[in-house]
Length: 240
View: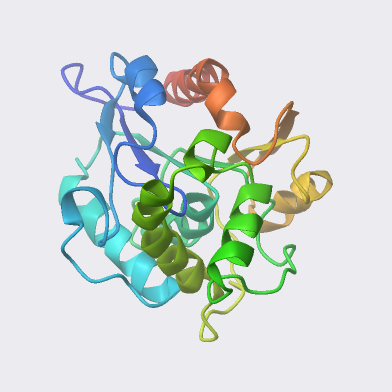
């Protein structure tokens, strides 16, 4: 690839439900000397806390896509990484960018086995106790957070909005296949980890799958591994 030496490749980090642009700080620290790092953020959290939440997946894909286009440096190779909700949105974003002739060199989804696998009852509208019980099963909230009502008050509206966005009745399972190679990773204790090779059906390029120790938030103990994977993938792609 003909890439200006002054411009490192870009990486777009797509946050999970309840997350924001600061969700991947350890990963950013490991990658910042190798990539130009972009952290798109949905409204209703972080720097956009005063903005209204989005209603469905289509709106979220369009919003993240808009932010990516605003910071994309054409002719600079880039990679998309997303965890959980970020992986769900990232898949459709890859497809949209490919249609415009500007697809990423790799898509790295974590914490998600690909479209059409998960089959769980919606949780966004559950009563507070039941809702947080379901969220806790994912490993997303520590025991310390669960002990403080004021922290739960802070996280509850964002989490409910994001789960509601993903569970909205207008959402469709995407009937698409991307041309971008995939490197998918899940935690061994995740409910759908054994279905991770489902991703092979959704790319016409290469697909590699890894399962690491941990639950849905295995990434918190594996940022060094993930950063090295991402660096290696981009290095190999740029060497072609």
